[in-house]
Amino acid sequence: MKSLTEHLTFNTKKRREYINITGTVEQLVKKSGIRDGLCLVNAMHITASVYINDAESGLIQDLDDFLEGLAPHEPISRYRHNRTGEDNGDAHIKRSVMGREVVVAVTGGKLDFGPWEQIYYAEFDGMRPKKVMVKIIGE
Image (cartoon, rainbow, N blue to C red; front, top):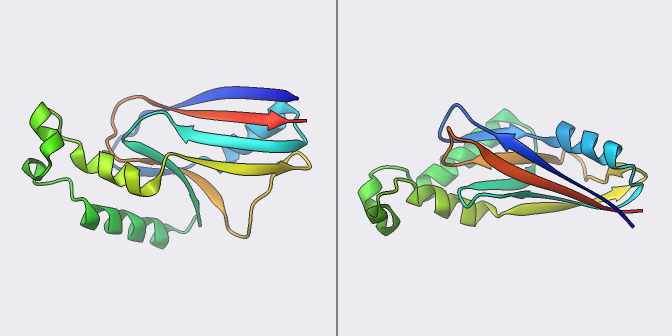
C-alpha cells in the first residue's frame, strides 16, 4: 500500500470564507500515483471545516446565512467560551455543525464524486494561518 500526506495552509482575508479546494486535492491524488484507495481531507483547527457540496454561489451564501443565523458572531457575550478572552465561540459551534473532514474514494486515479460534488474548506475564525491535511492511501 502507498500513501501520500500533504498539508495545505490557508490564511483568509475575512473571518468567514468558503474555499473550493477540489482542484488542489485532485492534483494531490495525481501526485500520489494511487489508482484505487481513499482520500481523507480534514481541517486541523477547531474553528474550520471541510465539507462536500455543490459549487454554486447562491448555495454557499445560503449556507453562510444559515450558520450565522444558527450561531451569530455577535454579541460575543452570548457565548460562555468567550469569557476565556476568546471571541470565537460561534466558530466552534459552526465547525461542530459542518464537521471536521471528508473521505472520498479514489477510483482509476481520480476522486470518485457524485454529480456536482466539490470539496470545500470552510473558515469560521479566519485571518490567520490554518492547516488542512490531505492523506491519500491505496494501491
